[in-house]
Image 1 (cartoon, rainbow, N blue to C red):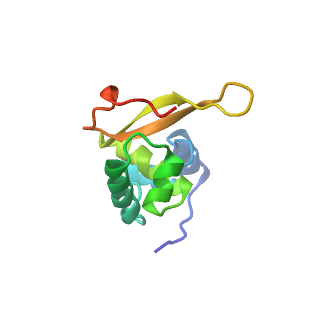
Image 2 (image 1 turned 120 degrees about the horizontal axis):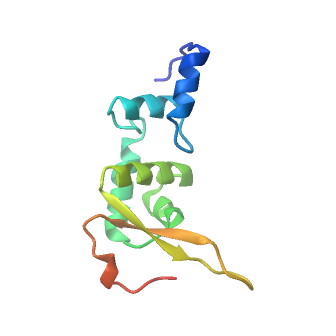
Image 3 (image 1 turned 45 degrees about the vertical axis):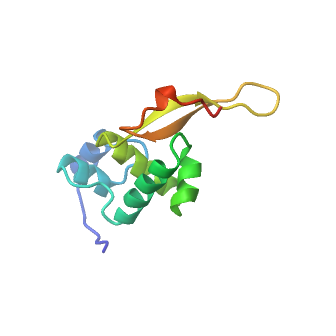
Length: 121
């Protein structure tokens, strides 16, 4: 359940200094207090872990689809799983069209030995 609270400018400035990209104030406070950052979506973390075990080495978009969650939910949950040491990512170059692509990431469970697997680029 969401509630509205009022904070002063000094507290807001503190929250902004402690924010990570994509954070909302609730996530910042939960992280600083050592609480789970995604309490309203615990199913997302569990679904993503299951999808990651079944599909190692895939992108956030592929994991989101496999887990049945939105892209931003998947990205936030994967970042939280990485912070906890449960998931890890590796850079991969994506190409398309006529030129070089931008760097993307492929995700793995922390215990998965992705170094011996062929790349999917």
